[in-house]
Length: 197
Image (cartoon, rainbow, N blue to C red; front, side, top):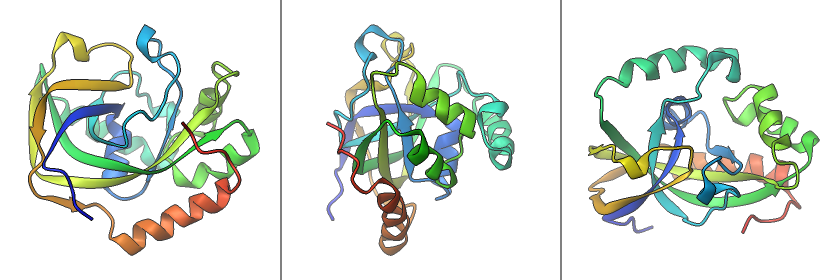
């Protein structure tokens, strides 16, 4: 599968979640809309993007206990004010809309967030479904450090970077067969759920 040479879009995600995904321990994200006026209803409007690690809102009690030390490590990494390091590019392979708390509970082994926090995400804005996206991550051989511009700030999911960021050579975090094995397990849980738009 051909990978693109550049990307001009990023998705904000907790730095600790990026760390867990980068290790191959997680391939999903759970999303609802943000509080930013342009992000009230989350949609997977881009199928390929860089991951923009964020450090706001992360708290140990919002993570399963075994991932709480990862949070401490990510906070040590946030040491260059005004810059964000883009280390990972990803492609969405599957996306679902979820409203069922039982199915969300069955997804618990596949993510780092605490069950209480995942449930809180589901019930926030209850008329809106929770979006579950499966992400195939690739590690940039040459991470790209970008200045954090004013337009990147705020509680929004999608960040147009305003420039073409060179991706260079990238390695998949998980081999093809391993990614498909994990994705198939999640697909089995979500079988019959509507695909997200």
